[in-house]
Length: 512
Image (cartoon, rainbow, N blue to C red; front, side, top):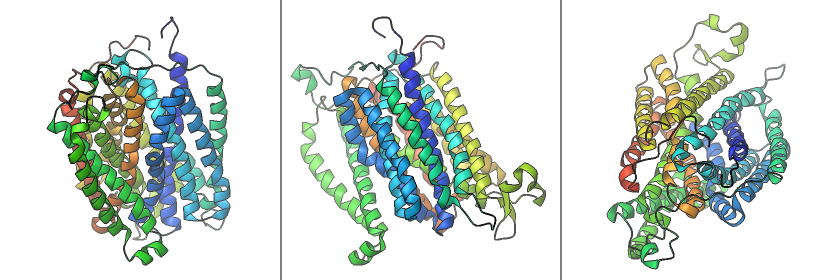
């Protein structure tokens, strides 16, 4: 740090934020399965839990970026923590209201607060030290995310799948407990941040976006057709995201009946119309996109697409992991249901012994342990190899794992699903650091758009659910397979898109 100080304390504090949202996100998928059973929902219907979660990211990403730009990283962090606290405490009255929408509101409120934290903490961790360590640093911070994800499903299993003496589920009555605990924790954390000095560090403006020389700042868009194509694809993705929001409204029975359409039709019509309008406006105004705009830099506009696809794949795998483990793996001997593992297994409706929801939720924690291991090992690899090359390799491996799941190979497919957790681990932070590379003070604004792309987690799982309901859950994993392949293409082209050799760590022992 300038003046001979250290970034260690700010880095450690920011890393606690990653642990927080890892824990919250880990409980989401367990809650998803709870409502699926309690309310007899289909796979596609239960995806509304994921939708509510990621809707918060979509709606609050831009306000979070504006707040961080106006009040600095510290202001954005405190605002996010307070909003998470409100969401956590909302689950107390939601338990008494006892309706699906009431719980979804709490999910959305917490996600809105987490949006502030992600928008601020991700770019902040990349600038707390030498730029060559950016990808390594953000992966180390996000390793705390992996720790939170390990304990989230365990807490969810304890409070969402509880049963009374008569064997009836008590999950809806005790669901508020872990969320209220989160509310207390983040209030304490907000006070700590309020009294801690956080340096407002800016990254280097390597692309002269903020150059006062108009000939530089307003030069014609770089990369011509490639940059234009990526911007257009972002418009299509945005139209789809808005279409998904409209479809959520139409999914309300009274609204759908009045309009005479299904939620899927609303999604198709809205997305199609908005994409057509957006495309027409863009192609008539594209000459006004100059170097001054972050969108003119294809390594950034490609990152928003890659992040949309990654979170879509990640969310789909996380959301349907418990259903996959309880329905797709081979039956097990009755003798396995004994001792410590007695609650892990149960007789299914077909008379076969298999994993229970609680057992699968505990296995999800092991999946997140694989995720954490991938983050730690990935951070080490990123110190020695170019970030985009490591990302490309991990994408190829994750795509292969998804293919093995699609092929329905029994225990081999189950093992491949755990390996997918490992290879997904570095994707979010690495895409993030590659996307904001060299954007200087605009990194905060760029960060908000990349976080906004998390909406992919709300859109794609619903498609996976439809495929799973129609063709079987294993076949639904073709969706993350395609996503990983497309992210791999971005990683493969990143050096060309950014005109950079890559982000590589300098030394494993050098201080941040």
